[in-house]
Amino acid sequence: MLANGVTSDVAQDKQECEAQLVNLSPCLPFVGGDSKAPSVPCCANLRKDLNETRRCLCMLIRDRDEPGLGFKLNATLALALPSICHSPSDVSHCPALLHLDPNSPDAQVFEQFTNA
Image (cartoon, rainbow, N blue to C red; front, side, top):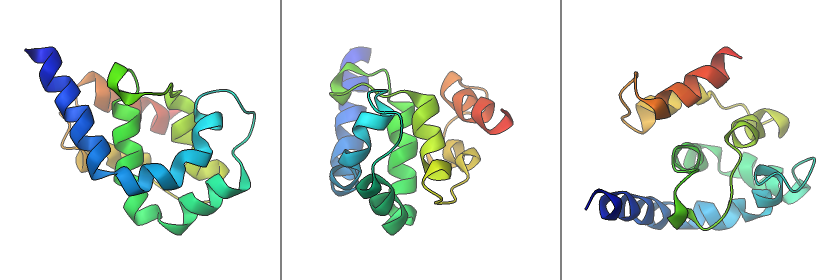
């Protein structure tokens, strides 16, 4: 039953962020580790809708290991994406945006990156 709840949450998140995910699809080779740098369209799309994509990027990082996601995602690369694309985004806000317990393993991913 827990697995169904997790899959459902991933599906709900994906549905909520569907438009942003489509816009960020040029970033998949980079955040998946298949490309050494994000493409120009990736960065352009990230900068264009950063306010809308910020929460979705946080969700993707949180759900990075969920089989229902449908693609691989390296959390470190995804967290670095806004900085690499010169699109300022403070990932330390992700736990609050996602209503995560500050002591949860998911929140710690964001905190560790912020402190690195």
